[in-house]
Image (cartoon, rainbow, N blue to C red; front, top):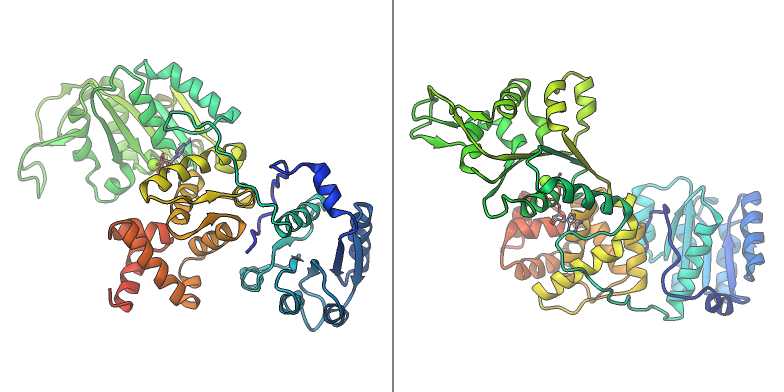
Length: 460
Ligand SMILES: Nc1ncnc2c1ncn2[C@@H]1O[C@H](COP(=O)(O)OP(=O)(O)OP(=O)(O)O)[C@@H](O)[C@H]1O
Ligand SMILES: [Mg+2]
C-alpha cells in the first residue's frame, strides 16, 4: 500500500543520511518511461546518486527485462503504450513479490490509484514531481526492504487535552490564556475538525466560569427546524404550538457559565438581529414572555464558514460580526501544522491503545504516511483513523495507514469489492465499540444508514 499525496514530504525521521548512502551504493533500478527527455532526466539524477539505472521505453522491453532478472526497485510510468505501468507492476510482483514498484503518472484517477494499490505498488507519484520526491520514495523503498522500519520513539506527551506545539498553536494558546479570564465574546474560526470546540472548552475551563456549565448549541441544526430562538431564549407555555410548558432558554440555563454557539455562520438574518440585541443588552426575553431578564453568561461562537465573506455577501450582519469579533481565533488546517502530527498521533494511539487494551505500535513509515496525507477532516479525521487502526491493525505502518485511508475515504465504493474483509472489519469494530453503531459507522467511514443496510445483509 502506498499513499498518493506528494505534498510536503519529510525525510527527516530516523535514518541517518550516511547510512542510507552506504546502503544505496550501486543499487539496481529498472526505469520504464516513454518520454525520452524525462527518462534522461530521471536516469541522470539517479545515477548521480549512485544508482545503477537500466532505462527502457516500452512495456515490452520492461517485461522482457523482468523475465530475465530481479530488480529490487522498479520505477514505471503508467500510460506508456498499449500496455501500462499497471502491467509492469503485475509482472514485477509476479516475478518477485518483494519488488518495490513506484508508479508515476500525470493522468492519475481514483481508478488508477486503486488499481496500483491493489497491485501492491509501493508508492504512486503524480507528475510533475520534484526529483526529491522520487528520491525520497526510493529511499523509503530501500529502507522498507532492508527491514529498517524503526518504531517511533514515544516522546514526552504533555499532560493536556490540547495537543500541538507548532508556532500557530502557541499563538492560539497565548490568545486563549489572555482572554480566558475576561468575559470577552470570542469567535473561533477554522475548518471542520480543527479543534474549535476544544478551544472553546479550554477557554471556559481556564476562566472563572469553570465551575459552572459549558453549554454547546448547534445553531445549524436548530435554525433549520426554527427552534433556535426558543432554545436560546426560552419560551413560555403556549408561546407556540407544541410549547406545552415553560422552557428555560440555554442562555439562562447556563447562568454564570459559557454558551458555545456552534456553526454561527448558519443562522438567518432575523436571528442574527436577536443575537446582536442580546450581546448588547445581556437581556433575554423568552418567547411569549412579557418581560426580559438580565443573564450573566459568556458567549463563544464558532464557524467553519468564512464569516467575512458572508458579510460581504450580505448574508451575515456586519454589526454582529464586529460584535463577535472582539477576539478572533483562527485554527489552521492540520496540513499547515504537519509538525504536530507526530505528537497528535502518539497522543491518540496511547489513548485508544488504552481504551481497547491494545499494543499497536507506530512505525516510521506509518508516521511518514500520516504526515504526507492531506487531512480534509483535520484532527478529527486523524483521530478516527488512529482509533480505527488500534482496533483493526497490528501496527501503524505505511500499509495499514494506506488501507485505512482508502477505506475511510472511498466509503461505499471500496466496500462492494471488499465485502468479506469489510464484514470482518464491521464485526471487529462493532465489538470494540460495544455495539455502538453510530461510533462504528464513523470509524468505518460510512453513513449510519449504510451500516444498517450492511448489518441487515450480514444478518446481524
Ligand atoms: N489540538 C488537538 N489536540 C487533541 N485533540 C484535538 C485537537 N484538535 C482537535 N482535537 C480532537 O478532534 C476532534 C474534533 O475537534 P472539535 O470538535 O473541537 O473540532 P471542530 O473544529 O469543532 O469541528 P467541527 O467544525 O466539525 O465541529 C475532537 O475529538 C477533539 O478532541
Ligand atoms: Mg465543532
